[in-house]
Image (spheres, rainbow, N blue to C red):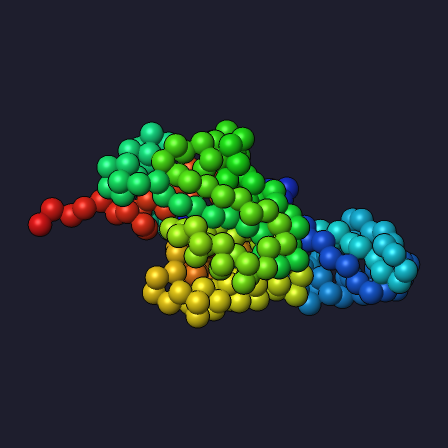
Length: 246
């Protein structure tokens, strides 16, 4: 099987793609011409504006469809592979009870001005996500969800007081890379306040690249679609790995 592929639209290998964007131009022929010029510079040729409408004052939203000549080499694709086994809730509870001999203390929050708790709630709350129960369901975990708009100093203080083993932070707001700035601030604050004794730092959100953990100064980054079971399995593998026989 060839590792070289092209986008698929109407027929295999035709290179057809669809993209959308907004230009600071009022609706009209000049705006559509600007959109086609941009699409051509993006390598879409021939390009068609299949939808456009004005938004606000002096802006136009476009959907453009057309063919690209670019190829994708699957052998050159680099992704962050999961390097730990997925465990059932029973296996997670059993590992914590038999290896840690106490409850695993987990704290979660949305930091900064981010008021979107849907991500942290999906992972922590009992109702969970994607058919899986949240971490509150795990009887061997002591879970605290601090909610939204928690300041970094407040989170550090609460984590220290609770002797948290892991701190989970969800970031949905990404304008001007706010999620990256907030994560770096988080990592720096925990490093300064607690040094090597800091809890495991885990961040997640739809716009995070899982390969950025080291760059951001945290232990793990989860992207969109992450389930509670994945997070629980990671916490066990990172904090209480299976003992290796001497």
